[in-house]
Amino acid sequence: MAKTLDGKAVAKELREDLAKTLQTASVKPTLAVVFDPADDGSRLYVGMKQRAAAKVGIQTRDIAVAEDASTSDLAAVVAELNEDPAVHGILIQAPLPKNVDDAQVFAMVAPEKDVDGLGVTNQGRLFANEAGNYPVAATPKGVMTLLNHYNIDPRGKRAVVVGRSQLFGRPMAALLLNADATVTIAHRYTSKESLTALLLAADIVVVGVGIPNFIQADQIKAGAVVIDVGMNLVDGKACGDVAPAVAEKAAWLTPVPGGVGPMTIAILLESTLEAALEQEKAVE
Ligand SMILES: Nc1nc2c(c(=O)[nH]1)N[C@@H](CN(C=O)c1ccc(C(=O)N[C@@H](CCC(=O)O)C(=O)O)cc1)CN2
Image (cartoon, rainbow, N blue to C red; front, side):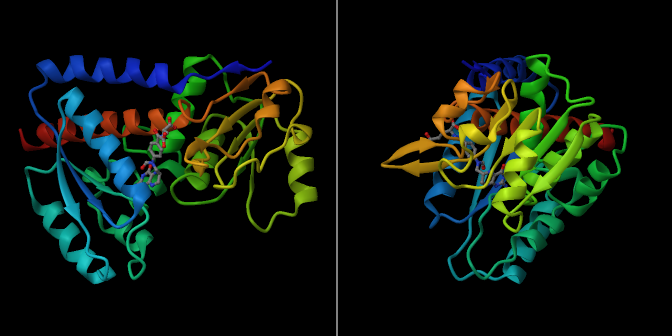
């Protein structure tokens, strides 16, 4: 039976450390959250982020986007936040309304305020494996933090990332590559046959496609590490992309809920504090 990669517990530790640091920090960070209030998922996740931020001592500022907003409307919103010295971090909660190009909006955020690491500058740094401290997309960074916590070293391992989004798959693959894994990305055009062959050879599988039971036990190598980034609702209950029977094959598995989700939020808060401290240093 697989051991649990307990994101809920690791995220709690991370948040407690952040709260301690913030008690004596010289800056009280402010995170601006730009989101579509008509999207049920966004309302839920933004609420979770706001509550977690308040508990550690980070202020949030809500910016609700109108249903008929365009990319250029968002450009004006982001430009104002970029210029506001009271705002240290800007979070663009995806998805934005249908007339907005999310990727273009991610790219408008000033790199020093891009706490979600989704803009081209910070993604470029990650893909170049640039040394130093810059924000990285919260979900993939949360996965790496979880692996590290359980002393699972990707070096020399065969890793398969299923999904190629800007939020998850691309930065996930870059982080695993930067950690010296041999990485393959599978996506919607990868045939089921090829995907199964890749998965059966993989030591580490990270999947985030938004389809319940997408990964079955007979596609997983015995002893693999399986990270479920999926977040689906089935009969009102949260579940991931990995079938429950995978627990009988894998050595390690993340639960849903309680795995990668809480890590995503904790890493966002950590990146917000780091951005605020950097901006304060730059002003001095
Ligand atoms: N700008 C961003 N947009 C989105 C991101 C992101 O990282 N940045 N990720 C997802 C959603 N997401 C954060 O925004 C997120 C999803 C789920 C969770 C979480 O903790 N889920 C709980 C279960 C919740 C439930 O019971 O329904 C868990 O896994 O334990 C946190 C964050 C899309 N957009």
